[in-house]
Image 1 (cartoon, rainbow, N blue to C red):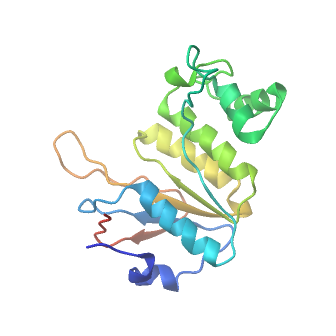
Image 2: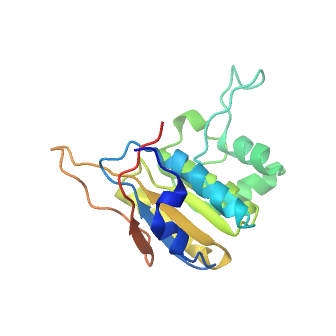
Length: 192
């Protein structure tokens, strides 16, 4: 089944209010990637006249200058936000993570700090709607990301896209949703 957001009746009936967090649960049978759903949601909100940011984890961006030396966390923030070094270092210090230092190459930074850096970039534009996911993060990482989102949830409507995960024995794992939030089970979705 190929879908559009218009086919998900719950989305057309929902009100997206500043200060609320909604959690969309992608089912285990869906073949949709969270980034595909985020892009469709982005398009829907833009049509409604809202400013939208999608929080994507920090990733090493290769160029002629970074080919021989991986980009550091501080350099990534400076590039994304047009900051001076002191500004990017202040953001990293504010995160208070023992596993993230300004001069750490992104190639060795773990998933949770990368996700938190992505949220810092996404919230800098002061969006009406912030879309994010905790895909591939463990229990601690998911909670750290949800806590970061909740700290400033009054500034935007948060949309968490919850992807399915499984235990080692193949059984579905419990969802780790932000608190408080409104959870919405999406139908089986498949995109081309």
